[in-house]
Each structure stands twice: as C-alpha cells, then as structure tokens.
Image 1 (cartoon, one colour):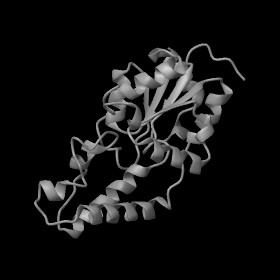
Image 2 (tube, rainbow, N blue to C red; image 1 turned 90 degrees about the vertical axis):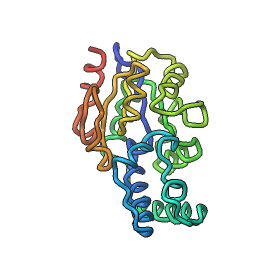
Image 3 (spheres, rainbow, N blue to C red; image 1 turned 180 degrees about the vertical axis):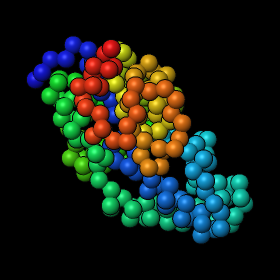
Length: 224
C-alpha cells in the first residue's frame, strides 16, 4: 500500500457516473412521451437528473400537467421495460475500475453517495463486481433530502472519518456537483452524453471520462 499524505478518501456518485443509467432513462421517457405526441426537452428533464422527482416528475407530468388519460402503472411499466432493454448494452464507464483500484492501492477510503435507493445501487454494484470496494454507501434511504442538498455527502464524510478537504467527489450531474460543492468537497465532473451540455459551474476537473485524468493528478490537485 502506498502512502498518501493529502487526500484520504474518494466518493463516487452512482447513476451516470459509475454506469450511465441516466441516458437510458431519458431515452425511455422520451420515447414514452413521443407515443403521446408530447416532446420531452432535455432542459425540462434535467430537473430530475441526480436528484429527487420533486422538481420534475416524468412519471406524472403527462397526467398532472398535460391532463392525458394515462394509466400510471402501465406508463411506469412501459418506461421501466424500455430502460432495462437499453441498459443491456451499458457497461461501467471508462476509468472507473482503474480509479477504484488506484484508490485502494493508495490507501484511500472509498465511499458512495447516491440520490437513488439503496436496493437499486447495491444491485448494480454487485452485478458490476465492484460492491466490495465501497466502505461506506449512503443513498436516498439515509437522508431526508437528496442532492443538491449536501446531506448525502456530509453523512458519507462522517462515516469515512474524513474532512471535506481530505476527500474528492466524482459526479456526472449539476445537482450532484452542487451537493459536493455545498459539502465543501472538491469535485471531478465526468458528464455522460445526457449531461455534457448542462452547466456545472466550478469544479476541480472536468473530463469526458476518468481515463482522461491521471489518478495522481486528482490527489495532487485536490490536496493543493
């Protein structure tokens, strides 16, 4: 194990960051809306990326706002089946496994902070074969408010036993990046195809994938 005198922990978001579930969700909802001759602009859908459905609920919008006679259970089932089909083609995002191995090699504590439910997150982590890397996992089941509220990150920091300046967050969405910033954690942004056009504000690094950013630069940059 190599010694690292600066950064002590790395905290991953899940959806869209470790594996791109987000693009598949948008495609599934967009197709479902199109069947009802309604467009779903990314600008509107972005309100629910990386956070709760309080700002924009794509399951209910056609019913509550457009007054369409839709069976909510059938609609949800259609979207979920389409999403599952699209996810059959998805793999772990480039560089994620390398970062997990490097973090372990350098003796960093590895955490995960996700606005999704624990069952969903743990299922995918186990399917990907990376569940054991994470010493701390905090999800929507653990907090009253998800991202952009910083509580998920604050809880993860506490459980990992590190201060905000001793950690680095990895995010793919503006809501996630805002949560990390609010918690005082330097953030690496790795947008996926769905979020690459969104405004992230300030961040430690912004790259298309973690393959573009050498791990030692993360430690040196955040520590500096």
